[in-house]
Image (spheres, each protein chain N blue to C red):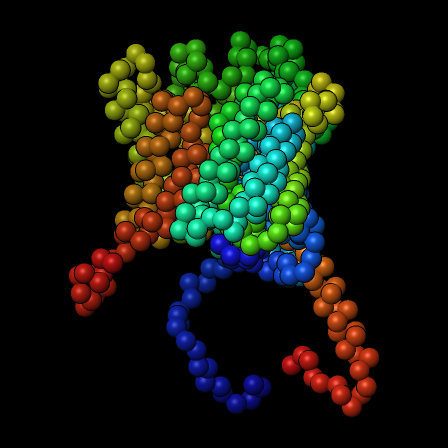
Length: 238
Length: 350
């Protein structure tokens, strides 16, 4: 678990190198935890059957990420290397406990819908990965930004999945009926297979988008190369 | 090439059976046509429109995917026509057309072309399409209509033209108007499972009953299958093994509790078992290749079918049985490889 790694070959192109970019944008978009790093699949597939649950889960995770990243960054120079993971887990578990009570206080129905997945945020690999890969090496403010960006990126991805599943599976968006009372729900999308299908659709969309962008960048680079004086031209393609 | 004799150097195989993929697929379509005709006679215009829609949607999907991926189009090999026909034959005759189109897209897009097209589909495409529809629209796919309804050649079943994304009207009022006898449109399996009324085996054999469009007549399906077997375009072991597996399992249940479970005759000729065993389990891509493997594959699917019917919550289990069989066929192939002559026993067993 080092600095954000390019994920193994599940998407066609390697994600762009994070070096030097804004940690907030980086987490929200370039290194999106779900669509680029493909992390945290358990909550992504399990509780995105409605937009409300997806949003609640995303925001809860954002809170945990931001607070644990900040705290871990503060204590990063005090913790001996041998016990760092245990320390991180203690800090993350504390944040999760806070969020658990917050959600319960805010809405019992959301709390019941999310069920065991709120305590399970502690086991979400995104959070430990950001602690080990970013917060333990970077200053406090950057870590806070990174936690917020990653968390909101996660919430964004969950909401994308949740909206496809809720619109097709129940004909509603945030509980508001979109197609009238005669809508034929695609029950499949509320069931686990629907989670896999919609995740696949979004991954295809985002990968295609990234590939088009990469191709455009390559073409721009090629066009720039053609402006080089004729004597310096080299054969690029065989 | 014009004057001198040319010695042609080729690699094996040197003898070709003369059958091409295209010819086999075309003959399977011929074998399906009598079933389609009978289905139109039983269920009328709605069944016809459903078949035409499914075939058109499947062919169009395959063509568009080929064009989009810049490959030569593969619709000429007829296999996609079979997928369309089989999908329509496994759906209720009045199934809403927009769902037929959706099922066709799933069958050809993700289940066939995404895997690499004909020859690479791990699962029978038509059944994947149907499984998607079954999971997405459990009510619509179990709304059956009676066979030989009145006005079936002059009017459509109302659910056929349901507006996309919206529910079809319930069919009970329409069925009360058009039925010629007391049957409500429940399939024999549903009546057996939930009302404990066993349909007479002769009716099942001839097929004048409610059900999916093409599954009703055991006699006709057997004749069409026999044509393909006689022309050596289909392996007889798969349907025989599957039917045998189902009959034996049904027999065991029947002997254990005759009051609760019907006899093997009912098991064989009801539901989609005949259609599935003859035309879907025999998908040459998704089934094993060794003779022993074919027997294991068929018997296993027959067993699973009957267990789902008698133990599960669904009235019919053929679709899931065949998909499970498809999933197991690479494993079955691996376990039944013949011993290579001269090789060590240990190596041959792998």
